[in-house]
Amino acid sequence: MPSFQSMNLKGIVSDLDGVAYRGDSPIPDAVEAFRRWHADGIPYAFVTNNATKSAVDFAAKLTRMGIVAEPEQVFCAVSATASLMRRRWPAGARVFAIGEQPLFEALEQAGFTPAGDDAEVVVLGFDYQLNYTKLSTAVRATLGGAAVVVTNPDLLVPVENGYEPCVGVLMAAVQAAVPSCRPIVVGKPEPLMIEEALGFLGTPREGTIMIGDQIATDILAGQRAGLRSVLVTTGVAAAARLDVTPDIEVASLLELIAD
Ligand SMILES: [Mg+2]
Image (cartoon, rainbow, N blue to C red; front, side, top):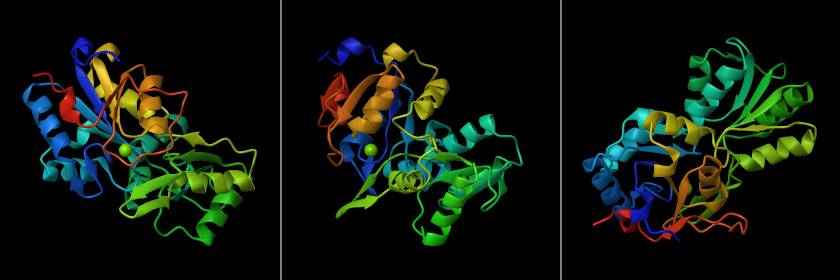
């Protein structure tokens, strides 16, 4: 593994859950590391597959925990989904979305029209109130030819006492019903949010690292974007991918701080 000092750190892209905090508990070493990077003038941005909150919500959460963060520094699946859709579909396009309020608000602000079975686009996001009627509408619209956009492909989300099913399970259900559909995935391991974060940072790829706790999403997305990847083992362990190896593995983000 290359030493950290040899990386000539210019910028940081980081995952949130499992790196900066676990649920509502900040990870103290991460808070300290980001404070030092902020003091040293090393720019950072955050990318998260969590589609239940907005960038404003995440920035407020980080600030409460002691990490300096503005909404412009946070690239989340909600805003990335809306910006991808703005590029692909005209304002007014009919959209049926499964998700939480921040996703609906982002789609409305992007100018899309809420629809049902007759939607042109089905958006699948995390929804604590997921039910048969919503699944049925998603499947019927997809059978009718709607494109399918998925905020994030995670199958499981770590919670305090184990795991809960995530959006990937909903995507799998729609794909099972409509095998011909080809979902467009927004979140990691697709590199879209990381590209947006790089555009914000303006730092060269060779001097920018991607920090994450999940190999299959964070590390793979970082590699696809051409960044050095750092796996931090403070998150919940997930199934390893033997074909993806992080450049550096640390138990604490403070290991990345050169003294
Ligand atoms: Mg994570």
